[in-house]
Image 1 (cartoon, rainbow, N blue to C red):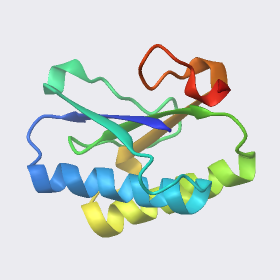
Image 2 (cartoon, one colour):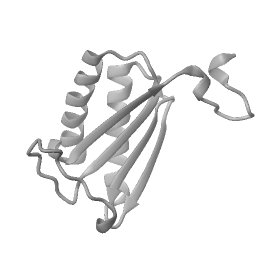
Image 3 (cartoon, rainbow, N blue to C red):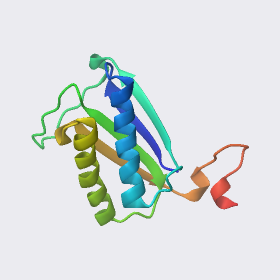
Image 4 (spheres, rainbow, N blue to C red):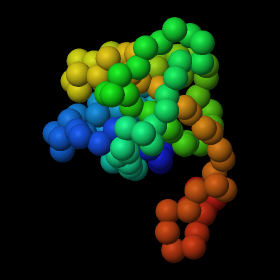
Amino acid sequence: MPLVKFDVQKGRTAAELKALLDAEHKILVRDFGVPERDRYQIVTQHEPEEMIIEDTGFGIERTERFVMIQITMRGGRTEAQKQAFYKDLVAELQATAGTQPNDVMVVISENGSPDWSFGNGEAQFLN
């Protein structure tokens, strides 16, 4: 049920994109208990001038391999779960997709059951 959006610069191969998506989903399943087939991922590729990603004063250097990951999901995860997820995610992305930890930014937005409709004009989580 998490909706995961990836924003990257153009130029990655299909295999590189698949590695990013597979790595992220693996950690969602492991750290947040998301069912294996509960997979909603969207990749948007941008021209370099369409992404300005700086470091908010944290001294984090970025490269053209930067990945912005936005996760929208129902609430209920603790701070500790989220912190573990961030660490595990960058480790998995580095190991399987060759993405360096400094090139990964994650934003998690939480909402509730009435905020989801998977089709047919229904709020399935409410039924």
